[in-house]
Length: 500
Ligand code: NAD
Image (cartoon, rainbow, N blue to C red; front, side, top):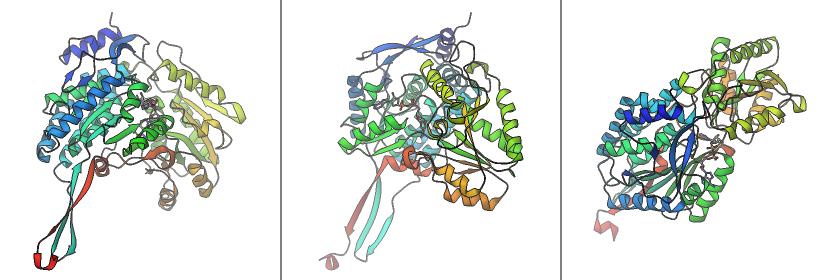
């Protein structure tokens, strides 16, 4: 009988790892001598044990930071020709693509997401290495026209050791999103994945070594709160990239402030999806549904609040959306359904808590509304209509397949409701009226506005990041490399007569 653990062992063996345990990846090797313990990962699609993985402690983080620091100071990577760094990153992209099927299987078993979505994640991860690999030798400083007797120019230098902490929902992609630009810039990295699903980050670090990234430049140390706070408060790091919840982001920001470590914070969202009666319903239904149910709603930029124009067309849209939600196939990720499980029993209970509150204060469940009766951590695709944006389900990040619907009458009201949230990560507008679309695009306070399209989990080339409590700094796109570089100005006097 195929179990989750036999499936993962076979897949790891196909990749060349004959092991049922994975340990931290430090200084170019899986480190068997570490301070933490082993913990058993669970397949969210079946609830079965998957594999044992190290749960590291602060002293393991110390060793990883020391390895990263030593590799950075040696110049083996930081002073390497940018074109050579780029070539190696491109090699990583190729290797990820060659091994995409196996890596996607591992991501699916670890996170629970449908296999085709995991395959898309591996391709996106490859794209990060390809994009920033291509950019490594094309991003330079500038000359400053200062005076006739002076030559002034800037250089962009790698910031040093980057400490990266990532959440559970896109482990492979997040490793590429922060790791690839940091490596392209010449930084060394210590990355701490979520304790729930650290497998692909560990394997990507090993692939990086295989492809020519020197030892100590990319270290991956799985662990929980202790390891995370040891990393964010470590005096040996020069920069922090944190992706996760607002609550944890605040703790990381405090730790960063203590050492004056610059940080990028990519936090939560409650992104509005605004649908007008004139929208192309075929497009909008597909986009709204995918935007909330992709990865079982566990996407920071998911369109979790549907702002629906009042009227018959709005009623019709909601009816069709309910039918679409109810028709979604549900199953373990490996069966490649439309909707997979949540990451853990803990997350399933958290989402159930919100479903319990759905009918409070006038809320009405339009589809779904409960857990799915099968092993694993499933919640039905759920649509809840609430009487106003003050409802708890319209304000708090649920992080599950739960869409909250709020009606509006005018464009002004749509803008007000869209912005009436502590978050400002992404937004979606569905209308055929270009004036209305542009007016909303300018007035919505969010890092991204998507008109008649959705970009959940993709878009390597475009800058991404939050307004307000959704964080600070930008990842992805050309902007994404700036966090890993610092500007040095060099000024040279060329005419001693004039300089004197
Ligand atoms: P989380 O905040 O619980 O954990 C994120 C990471 O921080 C994990 O690796 C965790 O082990 C670590 N951590 C926990 N406590 C820490 C501490 N005190 N110091 C340092 N590190 C600590 O988030 P999660 O549940 O894994 O992920 C879901 C959250 O992530 C959601 O809020 C979601 O919106 C957000 N997210 C944001 C983005 C984005 O780009 N804006 C992307 C994905 C997920």
